[in-house]
Amino acid sequence: MKKVTIFNTIHFVFTALVLAMATTAFGSEPGITSAPYGEFEGQPVTRFTLTNEHGMVAEIIDYGGIVVSLKTPDRDGNMDDVVLGYDDFSGYENDKSYMGAVAGRYANRIAKGKFSIDGQRFQLATNNSPNHLHGGVRGFDKRLWKSTVATPNEHPQLKLEYLSADGEEGYPGNLQVTMTYTLTEKNELKIEYRATTDKPTLCNLTHHSYWNLGGSASKSILDHQLQFYCDKFTPVDETSIPTGELQAVKGTPFDFTAAKSIGQHIEADDPQLKLGRGYDHNFVITGEAGTLRAVARVSEEKTGRVMELLTTDVGVQFYTGNFLDGTVTGRNGQPFAHRSAICLECQRFPDSPNRADFPSAVLRPGEVYEKTTVYRFSAQ
Ligand code: BGC
Image (cartoon, rainbow, N blue to C red; front, side):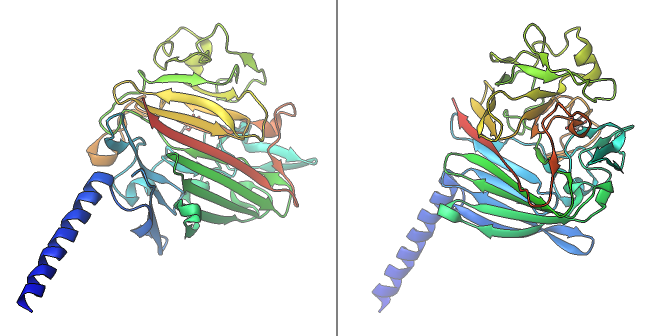
């Protein structure tokens, strides 16, 4: 009897040790877990932790569909965060930079918040004087979404749904939106968007993470290498509204068709760089819209981390964190420093509702808005 008890104890201690070692070496088990993250307008906010079989971990909350944290391995297998973020919910609630969030109903700018569909005029909220930006005063980034978790083919997946009411921020039509975040076995964060409406409206959704592949201690993205599969961009006026021209990048600081460091030409004497205070421009993605294709490849030399971006959409806003100025404090007491991260926002071109020659962002009853964007991580 005594022998059995001693054996059981040794067996228990051994099993606990093996489990503890496995957890340390490989992080937590693949799957999806959830925990309370705060409260918004009397409703609980939940954080979902998605872990894949390689130990890559994404933390996403049901408020704004925000990617709070995304940890990927460097070339030595060390996991670190590749997105900027805050310590807790109050940071996201007060945030004005769309940190890690979905932007919508119309991501990017609409001149003076005005547009018409079928001859009917609409006035949207203007929150980026004089224009409408990222959905208005209270866009999709400041809304609580309904969540459902799943693990299809063993891949952790979070589905978020939101019904944007007719008239919200000035938009016509009830828009039913679904976003599905999946962490795949290829170390990809895949975001699938779907929306339907009951009146003709606009729909243009994007993801607004601030990326720094150097990890949480990295303070600048100027030495990141960037390659864009884009040979044109849309120059802007002094309020960041496109002039309508599709300008070739060749011979300009906007030429990333061969990989170069982000900092190489950012201070060049160029009128467009002056207007954006750096890069804050929409690039025209080559290839066929609607097919998932490569947009960009970003790499960081010290850690070896690589991020490849793919989308089915037509444009990508390249923003070099020009308006981050160190006045807001993020995770672990670190201020968000000037140009300490980049945003790569797959989207319709800015102000497309007022440009008949730009691909349309109009969604009509009976149609389905569908879009996929993939952020794929590796190390070299
Ligand atoms: C825009 C920037 C803006 C930033 C945060 C980006 O998508 O292009 O102009 O400052 O979002 O609002």
